[in-house]
Image (cartoon, rainbow, N blue to C red; front, side, top):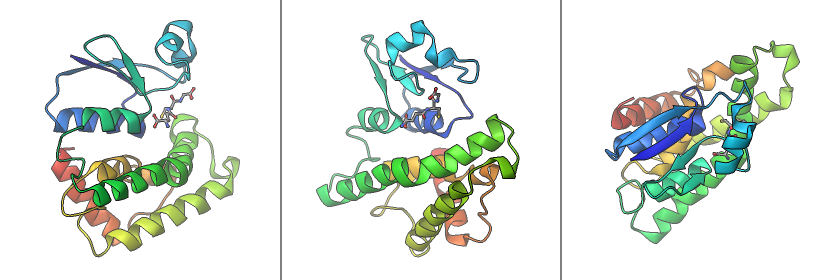
Length: 193
Ligand SMILES: N[C@@H](CCC(=O)N[C@@H](CS)C(=O)NCC(=O)O)C(=O)O
């Protein structure tokens, strides 16, 4: 059975849960409280020296971290990864973009507001600018499409939806982005969330 170490408020951890459920894997969840410093304790650092969640433990005892690496491993051979090399490359393109240009603004702003309870004036304004730019780029891409890549849901949709569907908790406006709102409902429906 797969063991997922995570926090159910974390989009990066939820990505793993969404895919495990979608693929019908057997899994168990172990809560890790990052605010209490649990991911930085010796026991946890032995399974991920980077001190971060999510981490999964495989049946044979091996551990894997980084949500993108975990998803690519779990979803190997499934319909979530396109067979076509070009579409697969486009999926990777969106996954890498999410980690560098989306999550560091949208998830981090949400973390400041939701986890740390900061007021607007205590949060760097660049996070809002960068997050809005990411959401605008997504809206432009998805407005005329059903899925980010190709003709069915892929890991690109899964990683992008995780924090986009929670972006309002970071103070981002989704109502002015109707293509994104329609896509979120579509992906949530397919993932059963
Ligand atoms: N790129 C990593 C990011 C992991 C990450 O930032 N995890 C956060 C929770 S969402 C964490 O563990 N923070 C605690 C810490 O860094 O001490 C991934 O996608 O898995």
